[in-house]
Length: 40
Image (tube, rainbow, N blue to C red; front, side, top):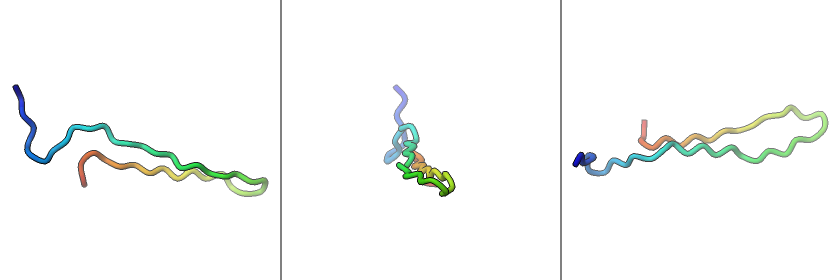
């Protein structure tokens, strides 16, 4: 059995696109929040 180092977690990075309201005449922008499994 291979044990991971204490405190480390093997989890996929969570990507959460925020909901944007697009109005006529406004530029379309999407903010992407990416949370890595391990701190950089």
